[in-house]
Image (cartoon, rainbow, N blue to C red; front, side, top):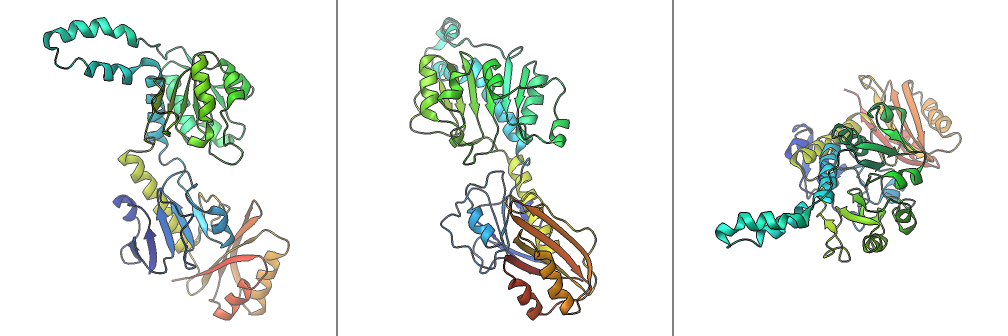
Length: 393
């Protein structure tokens, strides 16, 4: 019986991915094997030593103490792409809102309440205050061509926009999903100087915090419209406000409200609505649950933010055992592990080893189960972070 702790309300469709006869799921549960969450902050949480994996039903993992979990050998999953369509649709809406002054116009129209038959004429006279440009034929710069950025870029092409993309880390597989009409920027400066609209779709890291700042704003076209639905820290708000004041920026749409931005008539602040659709929540919950289930039952790692992707095809040997070992990627780790097994007359029937950023993960199928003493010997190898045994049926 696997125990799963939920730190947020998780979509029932996601919970349904766990078989009832093999899993116990609750928000309060002793000694959980895994944790599934959305936005709950885990940084001050004492994570039980029984936890083997954490799954975030969403893309960002800023709310999870990933370095601490890595040191404990805990695999942290996210769900990239599961909410991409929801964020793409919100990005398209943000671009349109930045152009057509819809929010301001709707608010003004409410002031006409109580004026009866005069309203149609007053509305016609007042609409000129809210004129805004069409997006067709304009240039959209998309910074980051991952799951969301690629969908947005393709949709903008379909709407008649010219699209420039910038992503120095785009994969070959990712590039295949892009419309052939999307132009690759020669560099970030090229995109900034040519775009009428700019939408940001990159992760927030130590390197990207404050990515949009005064220097980059100075390189933008006059009257550019800027959209940030990715992470609030990617933008230096004070620099954007100066850009709005100078006329360099015509409108800023952000999904991350703050005191300094609220009240500015050319800033549209949304309450982090990017992925707030029932479809996105279901997709993220399903993906997170499947990743936890495959990890707990088979040792498979897909979409981890701290350990390498690793899978071993085929069933666990009947009457045997599968070992899942996380360790630091240092010389002779595999040799030491296999030596322990060989010294106990344990035959390896299949094995895979994958490495990433100073870490390694091994899945080893054995023809027969190993004793607790043998598992203890492997755990005792310097550099081993976690050892888990899964029995074959």
